[in-house]
Image 1 (cartoon, one colour):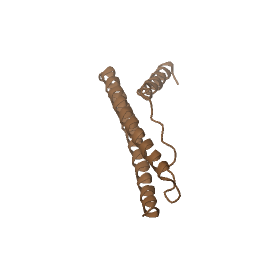
Image 2 (tube, helix red, strand yellow):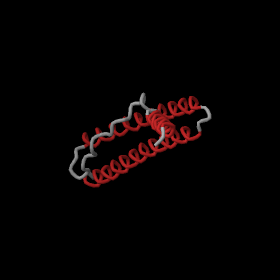
Image 3 (cartoon, rainbow, N blue to C red):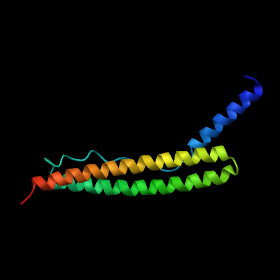
Image 4 (cartoon, one colour):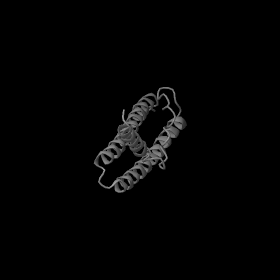
Length: 123
């Protein structure tokens, strides 16, 4: 590899590293604890799980808003660097999809367990 190719390779590696730190200031939300088993949980445990999911949803919304703002700021800094802009957008979309998928999975799990809880606690 010539010195010029080596320099270009280092530059590209540095640019990718910069793109991946685009969301460094945003606090990634911590997933709530596992949902209790609706077949054996108490009402208090189910309520705690519901509240924890609501908090997670709010934290996820705040994270996505922050990450979007940081991505937009990073894109503005990149000017006309189309490749790096594409990388920042891809990373932002990936992180957004991961959070949305996690939220949906957690909500589905809680709803399943709530249905089971209600079925087992009919009066």
